[in-house]
Length: 121
Image (cartoon, rainbow, N blue to C red; front, side, top):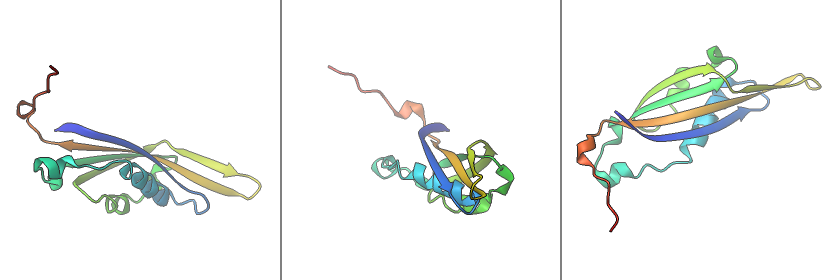
């Protein structure tokens, strides 16, 4: 498998302290930065793509991985939640704003021998 795409995103839940919601928003942010035209252009099936998602939040155990996986529209998703992101505590209002980060990588099993770099004249 060759990594073809890496996109990063950030998402938050300002008032609900919902780590899954922040993680889903981070994934959406990353996905909205890319348009994967090579599948249609080159005849690859997007279902063959491995999509590796890494989410960083302060409390990884509070992220619903299955809900997050359902947010991925293409490919075979692998989701890993790690300690990262940021919790911003508002003492005055006794509120935690959850900030999640996401890295979304897309891999495809391609044969490098099928490709050739163009040379400039």
